Image (cartoon, rainbow, N blue to C red; front, side, top):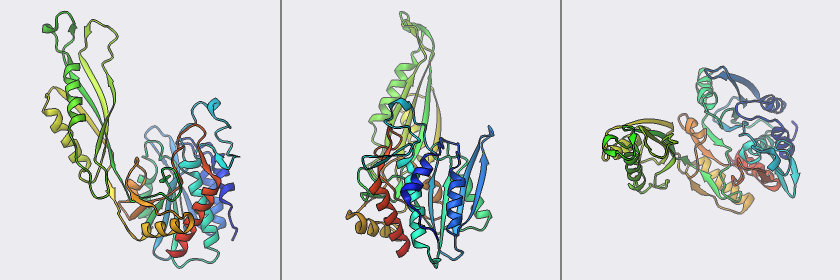
Length: 377
């Protein structure tokens, strides 16, 4: 069985310009590596209503239970202005101890580290199963990836017992943080209807901006909660306010704002929506609210897998990770419906940024951490 170099595999993956939802050859590349390690694998396509296909990969080594899965995504966000990069964003350049390229931190290096760890561990077949679930639309709408692969796995009789998601979890140094849950995320579009008129004759108009500002003030100044055991307090942020008015002496007919709430396990998507509507109703009733929940809050908490990752980090980095639920959403929000899931990967301080980069030594250490987990699972 070949031993895989995690740096070289990271470079190969980064050189595939897999901007969501393009595959750019990443799935076939991984499939070839995994088949050489003895995995049985499937590349599965799903398409959105517009017909844009997304490729996903599931691969499994062994048939015994339990099945330890590593989940991740190969799609990346666009590089932005490439002239602002110090190197071409998909060149996977090694420079000053870093691997630079779009997807280096989020999260191609983690995928390469896990595959390399398996190549060292599974020289002899383990007495449990190892699998990978890799998607191609995590950075997009996340409608043709993990959320559709899970029913596909169920239909095939595939059971995942626990899962590591390789998202970048560490704020500044490898070994600082294991994610054992995630806040929920919901977005709202608030529209207030008024009556258009001349600013000199406000008695003949009804300015919706006045009501909208009062509603937004209430949303921002009302405490949602004080947090919970594993979660910080829920938080609401206003992201845009728009009246589409280019005339200085015109009272507009409508005013619109958008906001996002990251909520903890004190709420579900439906109860946080009810909280929002209760606050708005205190101000006025002439509004429209479109509310979208993109992920429910969940917490795995301390478990066997988090204990293994903490022990592995202590052994390899000398740091004891805190168990945290901070950050944005990830595909763990889908996987938590079928098994225990924790997240551990590289640092995330340059994810999505110009000159996204990861320390070469961190890729090696991450491979060793995953290897430690495999040996002690």
